Length: 237
Image (cartoon, rainbow, N blue to C red):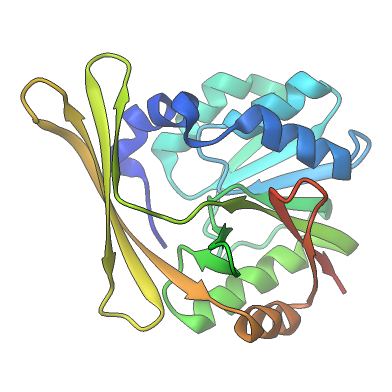
C-alpha cells in the first residue's frame, strides 16, 4: 500500500492549490448521501474532504481511516471531534460499525477518465490485495450502501508552482509490474531546485471487464458515473 509519510508536511499545500476541488466533490457527494446517513472515507488523508462535507451540513456523521499517522495527526487538528478518525490498514481492517456510504477520493483508489474509457486506478499493485480491499469496504457497508470514488484526469508529467516559492513536479513511468504505472513526485524550492520531499507511488490499473469482474467478486454492483460525471458509484449487493 502506498504511504504518504514523506510528504505529509506539504500535502495540504498541493491539495488546496487546485489538485482537487474538494468543495465541488463534497457537493456532488452530498447530492447522493444526505446528512442523515453515515459515511466513512477510506484514505482520509488530512481531512480536507470531510471538512467540506461538514461545511455543507455539520450534522454529517463522518468517520475517516488512514494508515499514515502523520496524515491523521493533521486531520485530527482540522476536524477535532466533528469526525471519528482512526488508523487502519485496508487489507486487515475489521470495523463492526456499518455505513451507508464509503468514499475514496484517491486515498485507496480512483477512476481515471482517459477520454475513451474510465479506468480503475488503485494503490495496491496485485489483484489479490485489491480484491481483499474491496471486500473489506463492502463488509463495512449496509446492504445497498454506496462506494463512491472520484473521477480524475489522466496522470501526466507536469510542474506546478505553489505558494512559498515551492514547486510541485510529477513524473510518470511505465512500471515493471504488469498493468501498473509508477508516479514519482517532488516538492522543490523554486530558487535552487532543492528537493524538500518526494514520493514514489505504484498504481494498479484495471480496465473494462476487469473492473466489473473484481467489483462483482467483492460484492458490488457497478452503477457507473453520477450525473456530474465526477464520481463513480458501485452499490453493495
